[in-house]
Length: 464
Image 1 (spheres, helix red, strand yellow):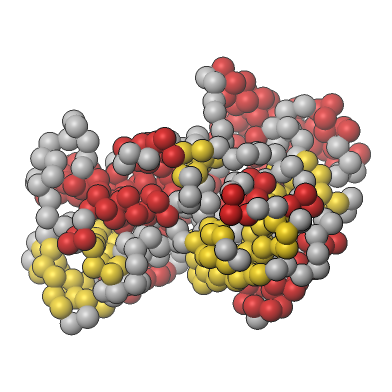
Image 2 (tube, rainbow, N blue to C red):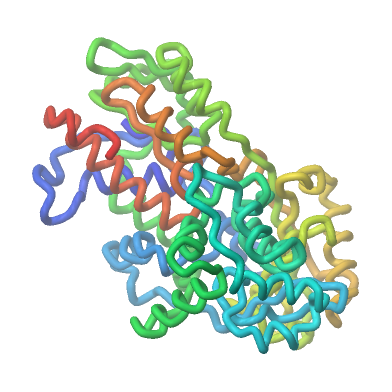
């Protein structure tokens, strides 16, 4: 039984049925996916407005984490993967929108470029360059992403360059996010190279040497094609939409899953819901796990999709969009959709997505729709030669959508998994990565543990 039909739940069900050529017993699992919403797919969603279709959730797959791309290929969608038309990202500064200095994660690899970059003071640049001569900190327990960045690069480079990019991926505050749960490579850069800048240089060289392709890939037409392909592969008899699970009861070594008054017997259960929803389901028989699940904080966000009138496409610079330091604008980031993912349906219209709401600024995402549209469109018009009003707009709200990986998050996940009874598993954004590739990878790991449980392999069913 899989509870939750988002990407993680669908991918887990798929891996249970098709674990791979080397896995024993492929195809012998009888399963059902119960999804509370009217359709499966979770946060993979698009909206239609002004005669075009625009993603309202994730719009691409991070290619350096291969699980998502590999799943697309396995489902026969490999030929439909495409790179963005432009990968150049900008950042909001007091001097307007500026391109990032070259380097991964906003960490420069070229000091000469950093000296010439007008978005920071000379003092801030010198402090960032001091990363090259500062001694590495001794190994310690997990710390915050912000603490590492500020120690190595200083406050200005952290707040103006790195935090908008890295914190934005989690809608989080870098001073509260765990390094090891979010970007553990930064810790290894300091440890192995003695410097984030040298680590960034080494990572860039390694990427060039292996002929690394685009950072992001998407499916032509939208990521909904991935969830549709998963749904088709599972078959209509295995997915029940509009089926909210009210409770789960242990029955000896098995479980009873109750949905809309119907009891579903199960040998094992995968809960692929947000952590707070999982807590409600396990509280009666796994109170320690429930307490830890509830301790995973979430923030609410919203996406404002704007389609501008004909003739406006040229107002967007040749960039994929920009990010914003915390609190400087109503939005935290903006994607130039018609530049990044050009489509015939856009014509010569500018199409953008603005993101609002994050840790510390959640209240913005709760504003009335008209206020959100007016606020972000007015700020865009001040930055770019766009009209003050779009032709059409849509706001998609994501309440309690983004789990926050606080310091010690991975230890909390370990405690959750150890506190769950045998035959019960959790998977999804709340645990070991928020992106689609992370959820797909986690789905494969959970499916392997569940199959081990069903075969009586106690060691294989445990968390490695």
